Amino acid sequence: MSKILVTGATGHLGSGIINHLLEKGVKAADITALVRSEKDSEKFKSKGIDTRIGSYEDISVLTQAFKGIEKLMFVSSPDFDNTLRINQHANVVLAARNAGISHIVYTGIAFAETMNVAGLQYVHLATENMIKTTAIPYTFLRNGFYLENIFGNTLTAAEKSGVLVTAAEKGKYNFVLRDDLALAAASVLTEKGHENKEYELVNSSLNTFEDYVTLLSQLTGKSIRHESLSPEEAVTRLVKEGEIEPVASFNIYGLYLPIAQGQFSKESTALEQLIGKKPTSLEEALKQALTTQ
Image (tube, one colour):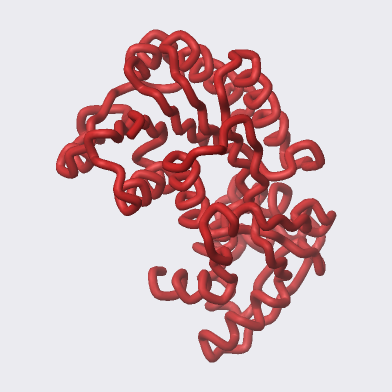
């Protein structure tokens, strides 16, 4: 088995990928987790997983961390500053080239060429093109937006008030559960034939927020309705309900408006082909979210 290094290993997606690698029979000794500090190393070392310390800001440290690694699972930066994020990604790509990585698996964004989500699409297109300049075999996992983005505080507020506030109108979305994406990544890392391919990893079934409130009402036994407002009204309402302004603005302008504009309405079966099953349904994902909130 090739030596695999997973960046962002302490995050939800990175740690999920590592768990699925282990479930697929990859030996812990063949997995390396990139972490930011010795403290972050503890939970991996207890499983027999090697750790290396590094951050996306330091090319020399990253290059050293990538030495001896064959497959790099490059989880994109979570930073909200898109310009900084591109710079961080460039550091990772340069380090991978300098360290002699033989295969880069990168998590981008689905249908990036036709998306317009707060500039995020430019980050991922730039990174994909940077990777191509290295001539290193690649696999681009163009991930859909997480279903978790419309759970959490959004779910709690809707349950409490009986109203789910968005600016999405009747738009459809193809969001997916993060764990399904982690499984897809583990599949690519452990199988042959994925080199120099791009996969649009979105849900093969579309939903609306009318579907959301119908299911939520059924699951909770409460009457919950969907109310789509203008962007300005929606941000004000979400803040009034207790959401902090930056998150409320991202939800409205980064999620709900693009949904209303049809940007998340494209379908693909690539995810179910990689994981060997249908992606987790909105109903099942809601059930999981309600039991853990």
